[in-house]
Structure formats: C-alpha cells, structure tokens
Amino acid sequence: MSKKVEFFFDVVSPYSYLAALQVGKLEKLAEVQWRPFLIGGVFKISGNVMPAANPAKGQYMFKDLQRLFAYVNEPHKFPSTFPTNSLTAMRALTAADPAQVPQLALKLFRAYWSEDRNIGDPEVLKQILGEELVAKTTDETVKEKLKAATEEAASRGAFGAPTFFIGNDMYFGEDRIFLIEHALKNG
Image (tube, rainbow, N blue to C red; front, side):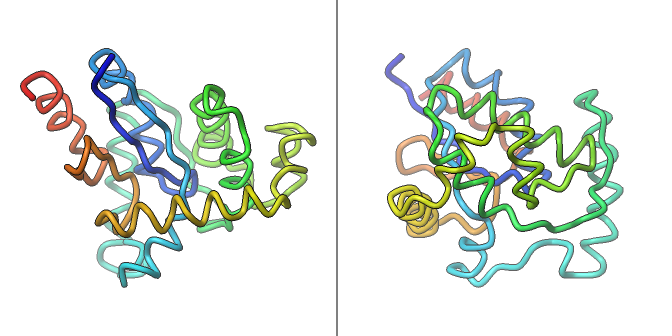
C-alpha cells in the first residue's frame, strides 16, 4: 500500500482507545503506523489541558464515553486511578517491535479502560507486557525516541490524542475516522 496513516496515541486517553478499536477501517485502505507518544507532553507543549480539567467537559466526558463504548460494543469501566501515569507504558510500546505495537496497545487499553487495572503500576505492566519489555523502558534510546515522537507530533500541530496524519494533513479525534476514510478513498 502506498498510502500511510500515522496514528499518534497514548493508552491513558479513552478517545485513543476508541480510535484503536476502529482503526481497522483505515487498515483496509492504507498502512496504519501506530505512533506512541505522551499526551501530557503534547498538552504541555501546546498549552492544552485534558477535558476532565474543565468540570463541565469532565462531566460530559463521562456520559460521552459511556455512549461511545456502547456504540462500539466494548466493555467500559472508568478507571479508579484516572489519570494514571502512562510514561512507562508508552516507553514499553516505544521499545516494542513496531509490528507488535497494535496488539500490545490494545492489551493496555483494555486493561485500563475495561478492566480498571492501573497501567501506571510497573508490576501490572509486567503482568500485561512481560518483564523483558518493561525492563527496556529505562533505556536512554527508548526514552529519547518517545520524547522525539511527542515533540514531532506537537511540532506538526497535535494538541491531544488521538491525532492522525496523512502526510501533512492532521485529523484530531476518534470521531474523525470517517473523514480519514473519505480522504483515503478520494485522495
């Protein structure tokens, strides 16, 4: 496939999870490259804050997520530890073989957003991903690669997650997948 979609995500983002559950639609039309990054880093660089930081948005977000998870027919249990620190989880995904990232990310998303497991806890991460992969999260190369991906996304205009790119065209949010499909079919 000559078309490529970059999917920047963080497993602490419920909307990234919803996008991950739907990205198969895009994989029929293009190569999808799963790009782990840190949503907190993007927020800091862009001056954005998470929706839950605004009481009205936060209250709406809880209802919105219930509706969206029901729509995609995926179990959902809002995590008791929210937000959790996803740094080690995202480093683990950065250290993983790129071909394994989708499968591993989905395991982390489900653990956090469907099973209420604290993926910020290294012991929980070891149970989900294995000790070998979690051990790689302290490697300086891995740390720098995740930092570079976060800075790259922000420099290209990202301000939250999920963020998709087709070349230089940015699409923000899981609710824009239909527009990405349209662009791939007609571009």
